[in-house]
Structure formats: structure tokens, C-alpha cells
Amino acid sequence: MRELDQVIIGLDGALRTVAGITAAGRPNPAHKTDECVLDAAERRHSAGLMRINHVGEVCAQALYASQGLLAKTETVRQQFATSQREEEDHLAWTAQRLRELDSRPSLLNPLWYAGAFTIGMVAARLGDAQSLGFVVETERQVEAHLNSHLDRLPAQDAKSRAIVEQMRQDEVAHGAAANALGAASLPAPVRLAMRGMARIMTSTAYYL
Image (cartoon, rainbow, N blue to C red; front, side, top):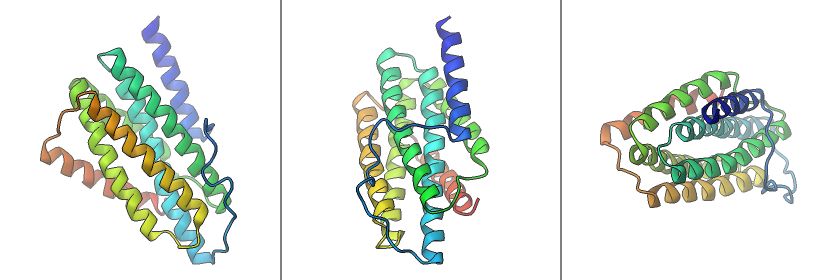
């Protein structure tokens, strides 16, 4: 019954994520920040970057769900569940920011979710150390990606910046937690493949 419960919970989470039904457990970091004036080009650019971030959080939900489902130990499973809850905050915050920018999430979210869930299952099948190593490398790449967004967002878009900065801090913490649990270092070809897939996702999600 426990396995069946996990599958049902996982399906519910997948449907809610893809449908955009999310609820943050923490206040939005930008809730006390005033809206700024953006011209049409700046608004489109901010929206494109925040759509990329929203896709990243859709993928994070899928990755943590699949890795948690197949984790070998309860300690690792609980860490994945904790990180997944915090990533759901990011999902809700970025979705809210997209609405404020009069934009929308990626049209390809079902595809992004399915692909990430599959990748997470493959990582988890290799064992907890390798699965944790995948988290460490993922969060390292996400941190770099968020740093680049802080450089690329319009200077006056303080609301988007506040969200991205809190996301960046959380991703660093998730990577550190996975490392502390015994993450294995991933081979260089795997890290390069992950960067390549991330480039495809980000370049597509900016527009779609």
C-alpha cells in the first residue's frame, strides 16, 4: 500500500505542477517590493527569463519526485521531499511573477516534466550516492544560471530580482544538503551532457 500511495501522490503532484496549481509555503520574497515601470521590450525580456525559471521549477518537481520515489534510504527520501517542498515555493513565486508581467508559463511544461521525471528515475536507479551527485551538479548549474539572470534582468525589475535571489540561496542549500549526505562526483561527460540539455531547455523556454 505504501508504494501505491506514493504513486498516487506522485501522479497528483505531476498533474498539479503541469496544470499550474501550486501553493507557496513561504511568503513571496517580492511581496513588499513595489512594481517598477518596464517598457514593452523589458517586460518581454523579464517574462522570458522568469518563464525559464518557472520551467526549471517544473523540472525540479519532477526530478525530486522521481528520485524520492526510488531513493534507497529514508534519510535521502526525506531530504528530497524537503527540497521538493521548497522548490514548490519557487514554482508558485515564478508563476505569480509571470502573471504580473502579463505573460504565461511554457507551453511545453508537460514535456519538460516528463523528461525530467525520466532522468530522475535513471539517476535514482544508480543508487543514492549517484542520485545525490546528480542533485549537487544540477544545483551547481542552476546557481550559475540564476546568477546570469541577475545580470540580465532589467536593473529596475526589483520584484523579479528578489525572487531569483531567494531561489539562488535555496538552490545552494539544496546542493550542500545533498553533498553532506554522501553525493558521488559525476563523470565529466555526464556533467557536459547536463549542460547541453539545460541550454536546449533555456533557449526554448524563453520563447515557448
